Length: 134
Image 1: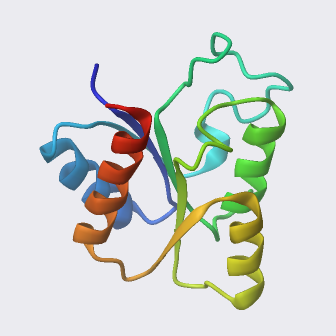
Image 2: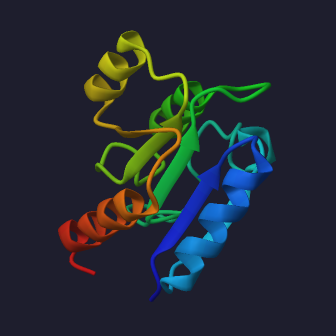
């Protein structure tokens, strides 16, 4: 089974770039311009089968209208959605403050500063796959 990656970013160019780049590497990628577009954003309990993730990897921007990336990832984690909490989640942002980085470290979420290098994203995704045994 292909690695399934969800990308959340209000910047269409970033979504398109990550979709094309990661799809070219053989990953199954789905993009959303807002967490509110994600069908499970407001579920109290994750609708995926127990111990089976809706996606293998999540990449989200921190600053988005309507709902920020950290808030969204916390909601997913609180509802029991995997891979949140398993190290397969990263944020990308041009606004990485020390406060954000500390909070992300406490949550076990990786981060990339915009502009990011695709090689760094590829390496991190491969690391996630290696840890998961894919």
